[in-house]
Length: 562
Image (cartoon, rainbow, N blue to C red):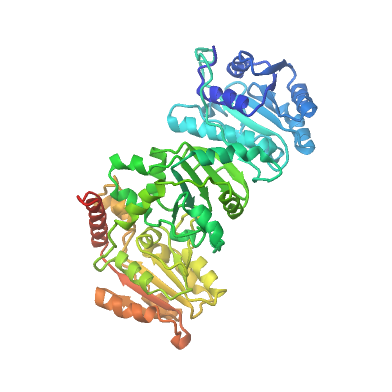
């Protein structure tokens, strides 16, 4: 029987799956549940060493002998500090050493409880990875614990070998050994490219060809990649391809971009049909919260992430494979390895995509964004502010000649205008900025710059506060709360824009919008001035129109002819 502590069961199961069989065990009570679970499993070859300083070096010797990782496990407190010299040696000699330290719960650190000190991160830069496991009370805790252990063990041999540290808080009671076996655990595997001379990836390609429902998701990338026509034909028919405007042109064909609307319109009982068996992701961030929720609720059997730096990005909670290589090299390589057989799954998404109604809004923020996107000159750059702007832009089809930029690294509202102005200062294209009022006024010192040029066009959506807070499901606010959450205001950018040399347009209805948009999007640059169009709308009306549009989507999906 094994310890009933779920974080310990995850740890021991993953040590086994990652092939860490040699374990050096030091005496103690706090680590006794870990020790008991290890010594009672036949996979592990355990060694007893009392002195932690010696134990650490003993484990280094074990790892040096065969080149495979070895682990040392100690109790809490200063016992861990005695392993520090061995960790330093392992780091500089590049030895794959796993340091496992038992710990008190975090609440008792620094409270005069015995054998306590701040153990997480104690080895600083002398380990390749240091993780603090949670104690598991929920499914999310278990996923988090599993991911952290996988991340640490993957670093043992990532871009050179070296030590890692796994700190394991263990609450009392310590000595309940009631688990009959180790759990089935999710193992994350990292491939260092797909080297033609190293066919360890044959099993990977075999699994790829087994799945019929395959989805490729392209996240944010600020580039255009031109696939050869032959590659595009080989690749495209095998996957449902999803991408957003911030992905730019990085898909070999025409991706489905209105997937967020598809997921909203599809009844829950039909979503299982759209769920993939395999998801492959490349690129950066994805805006759609609806897609993340869909794949977390309907997890694929596998999720592969293609990343040049081999990062572990478990966005949907089901990551199984990380492939460390350029994503376009990966796509071109698998194009010739895919079995040529009919795949019906992409057609289900394409059918849904074609059946959605085109958005047609009365005067509103959404209408202003749609008017701009339909009028954008070819080869221009579109900069999207975070929050509502980047989401509303996704409602409309965008020419693939338009480059899209957005600060989605952290998705904050600060700095969107400054980033766009910096980009425009170095660009010869027309640069259009779509930005909400809170984001604009937060970053209005961007206009203080002496780098403003006549290729800059700013569309400011001003509805007097943070609209997205009113649209969030489950967030019901009275007037008192709304004042502090959505920051209502009655501010205009006119004075500041004119003072900074902008040609300024104020828009308050559909007729003014149409007239101003014509001048705003013209390719000539009369007067050599940057332009700012401030579109004033009613926040409540914007939210009402948006909800009506989504209601229309839902109804269209339930029509008899569908």
